[in-house]
Length: 145
Image 1 (spheres, helix red, strand yellow):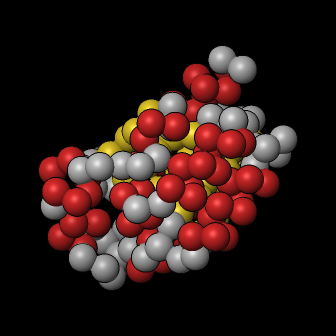
Image 2: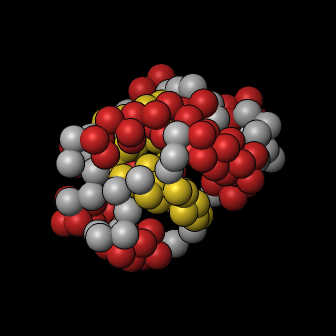
Protein backbone atom coordinates (compact mmCIF):
# COMPACT_ATOMS: atom_id res chain seq x y z
CA UNK A 1 0.00 0.00 0.00
CA UNK A 2 1.20 3.49 -0.86
CA UNK A 3 0.22 6.46 1.30
CA UNK A 4 0.53 10.05 0.17
CA UNK A 5 0.63 12.31 3.24
CA UNK A 6 0.03 15.94 2.34
CA UNK A 7 0.38 18.87 4.71
CA UNK A 8 -0.83 22.37 3.99
CA UNK A 9 0.11 25.88 5.00
CA UNK A 10 1.97 26.69 8.20
CA UNK A 11 2.41 23.05 9.17
CA UNK A 12 6.13 23.55 8.58
CA UNK A 13 5.98 25.74 11.71
CA UNK A 14 4.78 22.96 14.01
CA UNK A 15 6.62 22.92 17.30
CA UNK A 16 6.94 26.71 17.22
CA UNK A 17 3.49 27.93 16.15
CA UNK A 18 0.85 28.16 18.87
CA UNK A 19 2.18 25.23 20.93
CA UNK A 20 -0.82 25.52 23.26
CA UNK A 21 -3.02 24.54 20.29
CA UNK A 22 -0.74 22.36 18.14
CA UNK A 23 1.79 21.05 20.66
CA UNK A 24 5.58 21.02 20.47
CA UNK A 25 5.89 18.11 18.05
CA UNK A 26 7.47 19.17 14.76
CA UNK A 27 6.35 18.09 11.32
CA UNK A 28 9.62 16.15 11.02
CA UNK A 29 8.72 14.30 14.25
CA UNK A 30 5.29 13.47 12.83
CA UNK A 31 6.82 12.28 9.57
CA UNK A 32 9.16 9.96 11.49
CA UNK A 33 6.25 8.53 13.52
CA UNK A 34 4.14 8.02 10.37
CA UNK A 35 7.00 6.30 8.53
CA UNK A 36 7.68 4.06 11.52
CA UNK A 37 4.06 2.92 11.87
CA UNK A 38 3.52 2.60 8.13
CA UNK A 39 6.65 0.48 7.84
CA UNK A 40 5.39 -1.88 10.53
CA UNK A 41 2.11 -2.16 8.63
CA UNK A 42 3.81 -2.78 5.29
CA UNK A 43 2.97 0.59 3.74
CA UNK A 44 5.14 3.01 1.79
CA UNK A 45 4.91 6.73 2.59
CA UNK A 46 5.40 9.83 0.48
CA UNK A 47 5.29 12.74 2.97
CA UNK A 48 5.07 16.34 1.70
CA UNK A 49 4.28 19.87 2.87
CA UNK A 50 3.45 23.03 0.93
CA UNK A 51 2.18 26.48 1.74
CA UNK A 52 0.87 26.75 -1.83
CA UNK A 53 -2.70 25.69 -2.59
CA UNK A 54 -1.93 24.99 -6.25
CA UNK A 55 0.93 22.68 -5.38
CA UNK A 56 -1.34 20.66 -3.08
CA UNK A 57 -3.94 20.44 -5.87
CA UNK A 58 -1.28 19.19 -8.31
CA UNK A 59 -0.05 16.55 -5.87
CA UNK A 60 -3.61 15.32 -5.29
CA UNK A 61 -4.18 15.09 -9.04
CA UNK A 62 -0.92 13.19 -9.51
CA UNK A 63 -1.94 10.67 -6.83
CA UNK A 64 -4.28 8.85 -9.20
CA UNK A 65 -2.55 5.60 -10.06
CA UNK A 66 0.38 6.21 -7.71
CA UNK A 67 -1.18 6.31 -4.22
CA UNK A 68 -3.73 4.02 -2.63
CA UNK A 69 -4.81 6.55 -0.01
CA UNK A 70 -4.18 10.24 0.64
CA UNK A 71 -3.89 11.54 4.20
CA UNK A 72 -4.49 15.29 4.02
CA UNK A 73 -4.00 17.94 6.64
CA UNK A 74 -5.00 20.90 4.50
CA UNK A 75 -4.52 23.37 7.36
CA UNK A 76 -6.43 26.59 6.78
CA UNK A 77 -7.30 25.49 3.22
CA UNK A 78 -9.70 23.02 4.84
CA UNK A 79 -12.09 25.89 5.40
CA UNK A 80 -11.57 27.83 2.17
CA UNK A 81 -10.49 25.67 -0.75
CA UNK A 82 -13.02 24.54 -3.30
CA UNK A 83 -10.00 23.71 -5.49
CA UNK A 84 -8.76 21.05 -3.02
CA UNK A 85 -12.29 19.68 -2.71
CA UNK A 86 -12.61 19.37 -6.47
CA UNK A 87 -9.17 17.75 -6.80
CA UNK A 88 -10.03 15.11 -4.18
CA UNK A 89 -13.37 14.44 -5.82
CA UNK A 90 -11.87 14.34 -9.29
CA UNK A 91 -9.10 11.83 -8.59
CA UNK A 92 -11.18 9.20 -6.84
CA UNK A 93 -8.26 8.39 -4.52
CA UNK A 94 -9.66 7.66 -1.03
CA UNK A 95 -8.72 10.57 1.21
CA UNK A 96 -8.66 10.92 4.99
CA UNK A 97 -8.87 14.44 6.42
CA UNK A 98 -6.47 14.92 9.34
CA UNK A 99 -6.16 17.71 11.92
CA UNK A 100 -4.03 18.01 15.03
CA UNK A 101 -6.61 20.09 16.90
CA UNK A 102 -10.34 19.54 17.21
CA UNK A 103 -11.55 21.99 14.57
CA UNK A 104 -15.10 21.67 15.89
CA UNK A 105 -14.08 23.00 19.31
CA UNK A 106 -12.25 26.05 17.95
CA UNK A 107 -13.27 29.31 16.30
CA UNK A 108 -16.56 29.09 14.43
CA UNK A 109 -14.94 29.66 11.03
CA UNK A 110 -12.96 26.44 11.54
CA UNK A 111 -16.08 24.33 12.14
CA UNK A 112 -16.87 24.04 8.42
CA UNK A 113 -14.64 21.80 6.30
CA UNK A 114 -15.08 22.22 2.56
CA UNK A 115 -13.25 18.95 1.93
CA UNK A 116 -15.05 16.72 4.45
CA UNK A 117 -17.86 15.76 2.09
CA UNK A 118 -15.43 14.26 -0.43
CA UNK A 119 -13.19 12.54 2.13
CA UNK A 120 -13.76 9.03 3.47
CA UNK A 121 -13.47 10.33 7.02
CA UNK A 122 -12.04 12.94 9.32
CA UNK A 123 -9.69 12.47 12.27
CA UNK A 124 -9.09 15.49 14.48
CA UNK A 125 -8.20 16.53 17.98
CA UNK A 126 -5.58 13.93 18.91
CA UNK A 127 -2.44 15.95 18.16
CA UNK A 128 0.25 14.02 16.30
CA UNK A 129 -1.66 10.81 17.06
CA UNK A 130 -4.30 11.98 14.55
CA UNK A 131 -1.82 11.09 11.80
CA UNK A 132 -1.18 7.64 13.26
CA UNK A 133 -4.91 6.97 13.52
CA UNK A 134 -5.24 8.04 9.88
CA UNK A 135 -2.51 5.60 8.85
CA UNK A 136 -4.41 2.80 10.59
CA UNK A 137 -7.71 3.89 9.00
CA UNK A 138 -6.09 3.93 5.57
CA UNK A 139 -5.53 0.18 5.78
CA UNK A 140 -9.26 -0.45 5.81
CA UNK A 141 -9.75 1.93 2.88
CA UNK A 142 -7.10 0.20 0.84
CA UNK A 143 -8.66 -3.20 1.55
CA UNK A 144 -12.04 -2.01 0.23
CA UNK A 145 -10.69 -1.33 -3.25
